[in-house]
Amino acid sequence: MKDLVYKCLNNANRRKILYCIGEEERCVNDIAECLDLEQSLTSHHLKDLYDCGLIEKKRDGKKIYYKVSEPEIVEILEKGKELGDKLEKRC
Image 1 (cartoon, rainbow, N blue to C red):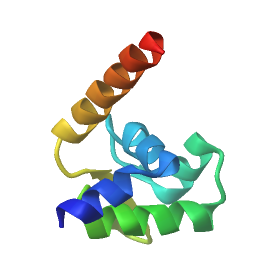
Image 2 (tube, rainbow, N blue to C red):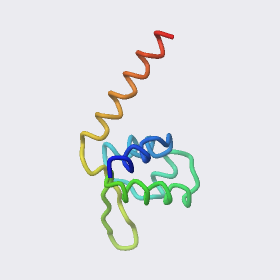
Image 3 (cartoon, one colour):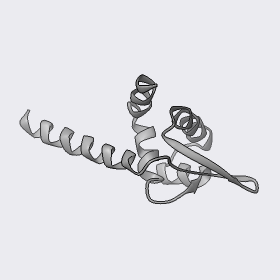
């Protein structure tokens, strides 16, 4: 399962989705708009993130809303970004 999580986090669009829904629940159309991606591609990434356990979903009528499964996920992404920036400055 850990390898699957790392595989999910290795994709820039998936990380952007996690940032996008890190603060609030959003439906696929809102997420696609936030990332300027096609809805079908966004849905594909959401399925992968859901299968990894990184996001949760709930249905409200015809819409499905997504949110990060654990608040620490966005914190981990932030720490990774900070570390990458720090290491990049050394090069």
